[in-house]
Amino acid sequence: MDEAERGGATLIAVAAMAALTLFAAVALTVLSLHANQVYVQAVADLAALSGAGTSPSALVQVGGGLGPSCAVAAQVAQANRVDLTECAAVDLDLRVVLTRDVDLLLGWKLPVNARARAGPGLSG
Image (cartoon, rainbow, N blue to C red; front, side, top):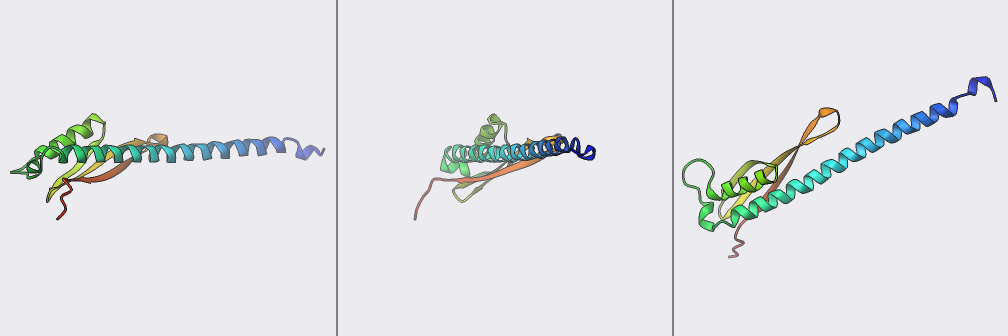
C-alpha cells in the first residue's frame, strides 16, 4: 500500500457517518413536524365540534368578545396546549384556526396551523 493512501478509508467512513447523521436529523425534524400537524388538526377538529355542539343559538354572537361557542373551543385548545388564533361563527358553522409552535433543531421554532369547521349539518 502506498504511504499517501493510508487513512483514506477513515476519511470516507467519517464522511459517511456525517452524512448519515445529517439525514437522520432531517428525517426526525420532518417526522416531528408531521406528527405535530396531525395533532393540531385533531385538536382543531375537536375544538370545532365541541364549540358547535354547545347549541345552534350559541353560534350567534351578540356584542364583542368570544361567543359561547368560541369560548368552549378556546377551552379545548388550551387544555391540549394549542393556541386558538381565529374563531368565527359563519351561518350555523363554527370555524376555528389553531396554531402550535414546534421546536426544531438549533432552537428554531416553526408554527403549525390547522383549520376546522363544524356545524349542525342541516341540509336544505
